[in-house]
Length: 139
Image (cartoon, rainbow, N blue to C red):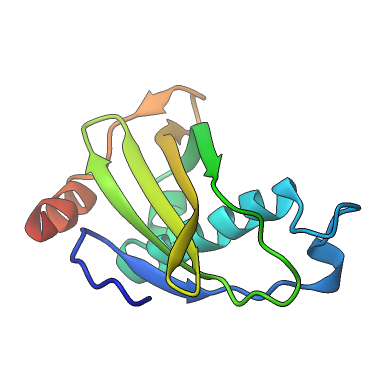
């Protein structure tokens, strides 16, 4: 990514457009963006707070909202680059933000809001203090 800025819990991924990602209009299908966001979110977790820590505590990270702004279509020949970061961690929720760029231009922006669910009760659970501490050290 050509724009360097420090945001908490940030990761970068080079994305690959596959032939099966293209829809009938010749551009990347909307569902592919959801998959890319999932890849980014899992990379954030692997990097800063592995999914296994949540699962071993009986917690399931769960999305409750996804918002995507498609500014410009991505085509088969494009080489998108993405970044995702956590913009907020509170007692009961976290907010992921993402950008996808092609040749330095932002073509997609996204925000996902999630919470933790206690797998034994199915109810929302508080964020682990360790995760909140990791986040607040980077803010």
